[in-house]
Length: 330
Ligand code: GDP
Image 1 (spheres, rainbow, N blue to C red):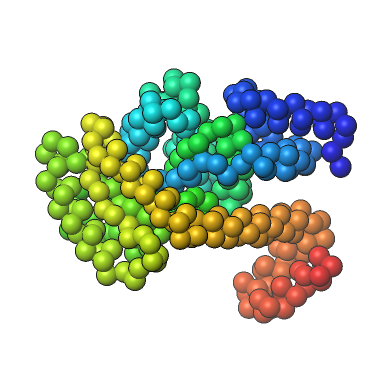
Image 2: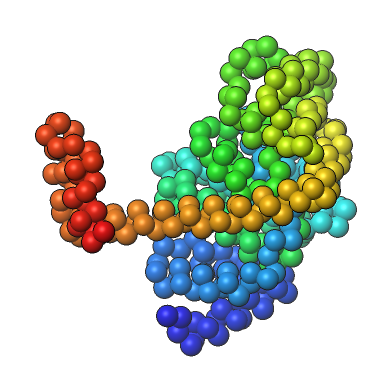
């Protein structure tokens, strides 16, 4: 139960966030990221309170291997957008941060212009827990940012592993940045990334890189062409950009707006958002269940022995699961 003093604090935070107060937003994000059960409860109450104020942003995921130019591009794109009157939040999902203790994404120093822009807000990746846990916190932070009036939320992730799919599941549009390397690069790209991309932008299309970037773009176009279309209204375009020289970013943004218009008109936008919400409920539930399992003392006491028995082949995996479930009262 949320205590009366906490209710007053929640009301105060909610009002502050709605008014766009950055200090209140930062405090609320700290609550969302906290592991303390009391904070968790307050965060839940706050999110429920702010629910009607959420959902208003363009939610855009951005991925690419380290060095492709994510921070440079986000810095330039974000600044273009704030200059046009948008309020831009930059969030990150960096699962490596929980292992290394430091995030390679979302660091303010990587985005020099946005870091001092009063209409931008940069938050590094939460740094503890599983990918699901980290992503859930980022998603809740996104909702808080929307309630605070940010109308563009950029969620950055690195081009490794499952994190891209996880981020794609929390955004409206998934942008994949690629390096101009044509043939060689193409060998290495994961089919999975092409399947979730709503657009591919070949970065560093400037100076000597311009020709190679165009060649790479042609190859990506051909690669995308072979895939079965995912949407009746949207074919992922391939563009060339220079995040550094601020070239092609307006065209890129126009495409993102066009995607919004087309998917809204077809009803896909609303459908995807609704499906995402339910998927997040399940993902958070799974995380909560796993946490309960790990924190259960009876399970904790038996787990090493059960695991050893399964490893040695003395106990079948299904029998072990049965015993654990029984300990959990299931
Ligand atoms: P991230 O690791 O994906 O965030 O990549 P960064 O934004 O840190 O960029 C990595 C390096 O590539 C830096 O030295 C950037 O200056 C450079 N870079 C980024 N974008 C461009 C671009 O559009 N053109 C050129 N020539 N270099 C770029």
